[in-house]
Image 1 (spheres, rainbow, N blue to C red):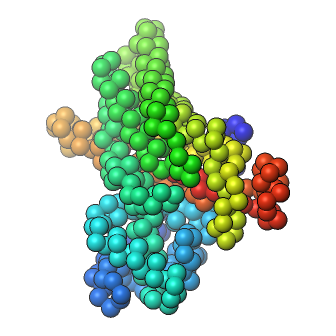
Image 2: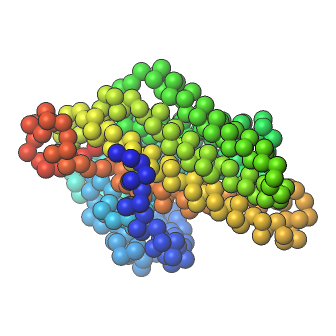
Image 3: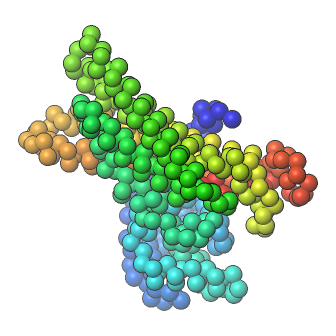
Length: 376
């Protein structure tokens, strides 16, 4: 399955999201947190009960254990789901609070009516943001999806520095792909154990590819003596885009190549494991690679387009430190807006028709569709 054949069919909702952003911001502002003490566990919950829907979806529908809060068959539903996944407020959740959430969800399995739907959805959001769905182990904060922007904006800023020298260029590409590799590893499908040496080799291949691509493009630009200096500088600002897009795609393919070789677990509607499938693994890895290929596009296109205008303002021109500050802010905002859009191209808990799987799996179940964790 070709990666570039996957993305176009999944981009239909992007214009709706960006046109709707001004309408969603007030709803997010209503989520100012107030301390609530009337439940089985005390936690922060959003005020503003008058906002019952978001994009036409109920804000707190009937709770479903281990299922997303919003429908995953539409782009908008997945977008809202990933806003929960990348919420940076979960980074400051204490171990005590996490244990309370896990205990509440475990109690729900037995008693069902132990808390309100809102309390249960918040508990599940915290659990899923911190614990890996396959191993149930804590993911380190810098490598969670909720930490992708807070910890990753620095490398984005570094890659967009104008006219970098060779050491600067190679350093920031190495930093970016190292962070990406750790994120890909931490959010992989871990239903099948893999040797650590596999990931070490994949890391080396991913970083080498990123540095090679970026260095090659920069070398060609610097050799283009016929271009005017201003034009050459502008073109060089866009070098990170193709380099990062291709390198990020290869990063996923390298870091998760072992899943394609060994397969991942697929399960039925009841959550029972049916078997291991290499076909499902290929679909999971390719879809994740497609999101990484798309992510740098708005992220690295917006700052080079916006900064030339901001650099003409008196505030930015007064000092280089102000210019760096404004660049960092623009990069962070672009990153924050790009991430949920890219992730929403595909659902995290994906499905595949049983007829497309291996023959032995088709013989084990009568279900027409099976499910698997795509990873992030």
